[in-house]
Image (cartoon, rainbow, N blue to C red):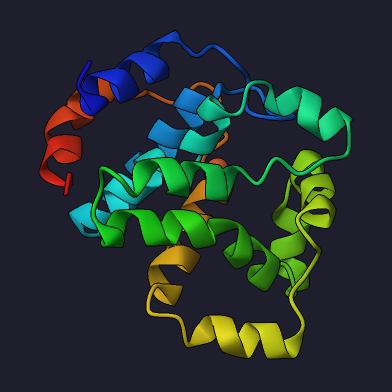
Length: 178
Ligand SMILES: [Fe+2]
């Protein structure tokens, strides 16, 4: 099976809820992409947004991992898998989207926006970054898109939203393959 068909079928077949939320992982990722489109981001960032939690599909049971107090490192798992198929501009912000949360969570305003599940996972992910780690992250080539992706990510957990279909993104996915 071609990778795009496999990705699309995972989006359609996965019914797992996003940890601690009322939307499925598939709905959450599609909403993240829709927010990137709404903000008129480039195709690279829309594609990153769409795939940013793909690692959760790969991890067998993300809910179990959280219950066990183990961070599944879904960002690395997704990155490692997707980098064989997609351009660097797509996969780098995916790798950094958890680091971006740890960066943004230094601000109380952002921290307060996090869901309870996201606050718990923040601790499992290593907590907020210190100043030295922040300076290092700011110098990364993909710092800006990673931060933007994270902001869309946080806002993409709504129910009752008119959703796009994963098939609407088939051309976008195809055009961002290596
Ligand atoms: Fe996410």
